[in-house]
Image (cartoon, rainbow, N blue to C red; front, side, top):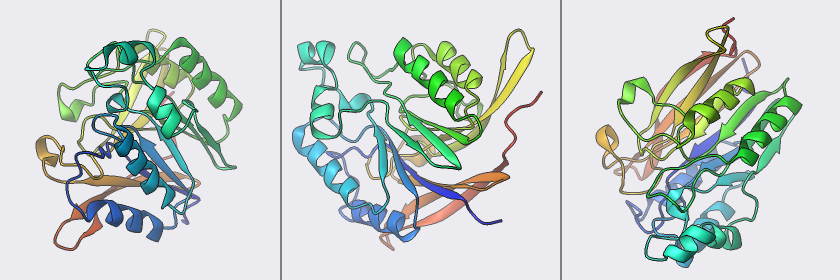
Amino acid sequence: MSTVYTIAHCSDIHFGKIAHAEVVPALVDDINAHDVDLVAISGDLTQRARTGEFQAAVAMMDQFEAPTLVVPGNHDVYPWWRPWKRLTAPLRKYRRLVQRELRPTRVEPEVAVLGLSSPHGATVKSGRLSAEALSTMRTFFDEHASQFRVLVMHHHLTRMQQLGRHDIMGNADEALTAAAQARVDLMLCGHLHISHIEPVDIVSDRGANHHRMVVASAGTATSSRGRQSNRGVNFYNLVHIRPDSFSVEERRYQPDATAFAEVRTTSFDRVTSLS
């Protein structure tokens, strides 16, 4: 069955900690070669939110042939040695140099994509969604109930069983419930620097309602900060959305070939309701 819509999902770019001189152009070339419809970047464009790092990220995004949808990560707020700015206007530089919009959207006949900003200044690395962001999520996906619904953010809403203990958002339970009520089909996130795909079953209202959402956690696309089994390697995802199914293709950078190549593809039926 032919692909209806393709999203390139990359995360944790971390300009300032780029792993290989060739990895950024290799990422751009590989994404452009796949004729994608959208490039979704789920945060951490920079390592320390420096001006030059943001400028390098923007220069990279300008090379993508497809439109981009980007949200910030915790490394994109002012660093801890700028405490006043970190607490009072944590994303001021990001909004000035990258984009002002913190809740970007992309709507096509087949797909509705919403990005939400989860980082804030009053933490070391965690995130949370504001009440306004949760309201935006519900309203946006209610308006696009017939489309395949994709949520893009940096932090995780739930722990992925196969990864063991890891960071999740401060108000994860509330945000996860909102995502289930909004019938989100696919969440694209990062933060962990580990490439991993896992379906999550969400039970609410004392077991009366069930919803299945697939979480695609992208590895670090270009930095030297891979963790655990992904230490020293770089990944990004290609999401292929079809009328009755969708798949997430994990692509790994091969330094010897200076190119990305498919490692594995995980496929799912487009059936999100279990009851």
